[in-house]
Image (cartoon, rainbow, N blue to C red; front, side, top):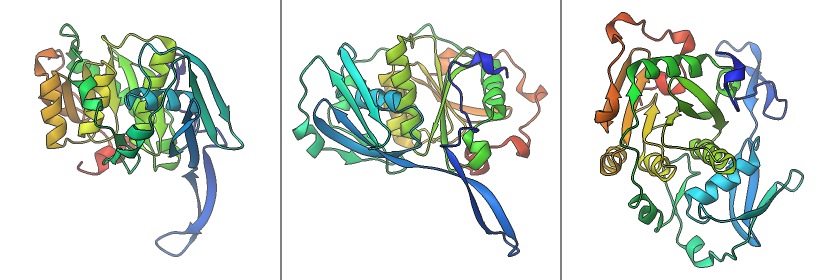
Length: 293
């Protein structure tokens, strides 16, 4: 896959994102390996502290904006007057024209299953229930196979050091924006922040994740108004239920020539012969495919 086809892609050569660590292997022999570096990032909305996240901190502006949008603390029509990131103090501040006060809302937050990083607020479902996804969007099975291969072969922090999740915005069989982070919801939020700040139309897009298809992953995809969600990993029952409620096309366990669709199947176009394609070689497998779910 030509790197020119990506607007953003992982940069495993960035020295800030990994470090070399010495240890012993299973036979007691000295080894040196790359490990992913995570850092705290404290997010402020105007003058109010919102959350401290553990992140690789490669795109703090996109992460901050996407997080606030996905938590319904930033409205799609809010005018952002500034985004300030101080690498030394590990703080990012999003400033808006609208005055904000979420003191009560922050007291009500609940942790979710997203690697202890995701949070869900009570009124997020109100937004979820008002979204109508594109009925004309389609997902060709040939695109599933092409995307899985292209994303799998793209140089990434996962392949360099592991301990990372990926989220990829795609159109047709082409990956456009590929984000990684230690928490899968951070990676999703980065994609949404990019889409918002660059005015990307979601209606003809596909969202690809290496993480599980949980309720929050479904909710965030619907909030982004992307009609199709594909994962290498498996499903939760509530994730499937919410996808069916929203008519989100939900495809999981997409590995090699195999996949399972459990919601929004009317968008599928079977234009590729699955039996004719090779299965995924182990050398190209990622975490989501090595573990059953």
